[in-house]
Image 1 (cartoon, one colour):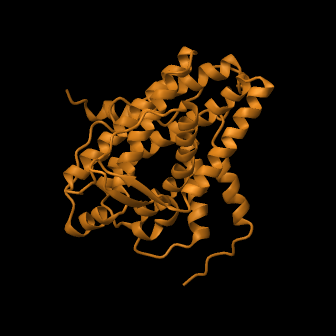
Image 2: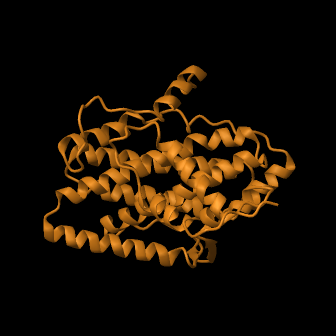
Length: 306
């Protein structure tokens, strides 16, 4: 049964705006903070979009631009890994609200994978065969890698998505199709940022030291990963190389005009703030990438006008 457009529109609006009915501050680690971060994720769940998708017919030029983007293999595989890693970590959590929120997050990651798989099939994009996904030996490490990686990639993807929309290189129908996916990623990293704060507050001092060392190691790993090409094996054992850093370097692939680094960074900041604006201000936002970019902007010269 396909829902009517009005129902889909209401669900889409509800996924973008949420305010807690609880008064006063939501102190990270408190029962109120835990309940409300989980309630936010549960009540902003969109049961329809991006499940209800009619892939638009693309004119040859737009189709070629879509097919030529070097992201589809790693995008599909990343969503598959995220689903498994989030589900694995959710299974280790005793607190039912948090466990259910992370399990729903894993389900949504799988839905993103299905959306991408259907899109590449609809447009004839060839993918390498997927190797089996391996259950993580350290579920917490895997979840932290996935969560912080999504914080990095989503920050830049918000800006790139806006560049693609303004450029007109991609049809509006395709932009509209992927818009709810982008907003779901915003919800995902909002949940992750608040989970990190809640989790920290549950730890003893010696557990906190161990956790902070693990977080630092995750950031070091992600920095190293983004300075090299990703090497993956397909189901037949063949090696494939992918650009792990497309969300940082891909502006020219989605726009017909040059866009400077400073302009792109400012756009990423603005779009990140816009996407988070509808959610209760008392919930924590992912802060590392915005802080790093604001610091870097102090030393960047204004882009030269042509």
